[in-house]
Length: 74
Image (cartoon, rainbow, N blue to C red; front, top):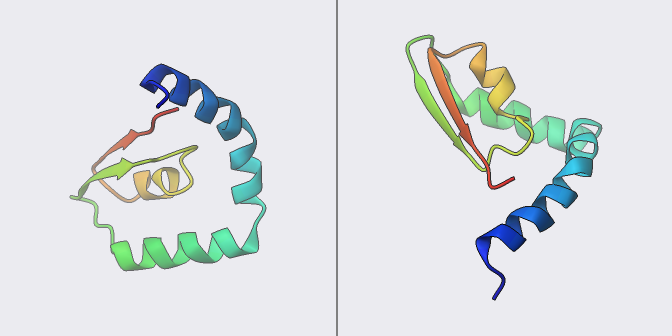
């Protein structure tokens, strides 16, 4: 099984193209809208985004909450 460093490098290479794929897809836009609607973020909320990737959900949430912590392997 590959160690964590190898996995991070592999995912880092793949993540470079992921943002474009996600931000140009109408299906992913529908998913983002559904998640953000159900999250019901409030100004006093503190949020953790695990597997944040390029910030597809993190960035819009950040505008609506007190604090957000985004974590991703890449």
